[in-house]
Length: 161
Image (cartoon, rainbow, N blue to C red; front, side, top):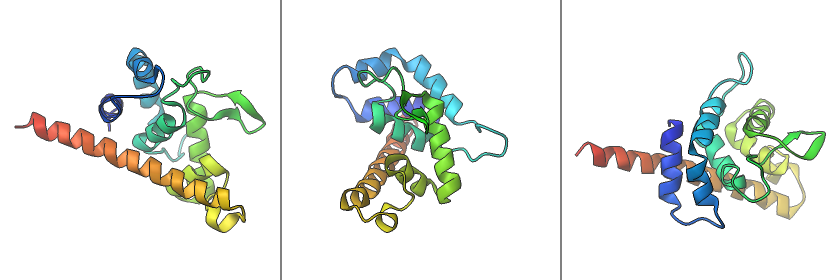
């Protein structure tokens, strides 16, 4: 999906958001569009590129594309592993997703690693909370991705009639 289509889909799917997040996304559309464009490019030669819809879904679920209070535009990832409480930028989130893909071998594992630190929390942790958080988060990301694509497809179909 194009960055523009992603923003249109998110705004269409979520007419009401907590606090001022919807208006923030509207106000920051040019910046978010540019960020979504950047996350669709390899971060280094030969590196895997997460599907733009996946990155957007994670960013929206984490911080409403950086619009949650006190996020400062961050998409829910620290600047690096040694500075866990220093917010990064959109590319920090992409780097973590790419590293997860390299470690886990799938984007599904990467998403769960983004949330829990583990590729497969059900196998890799005895903590029941962690075992349920990763798969639940993955389902939410996948559901949002599917809903964005379906929204775009409905809009395209209605424009062709």
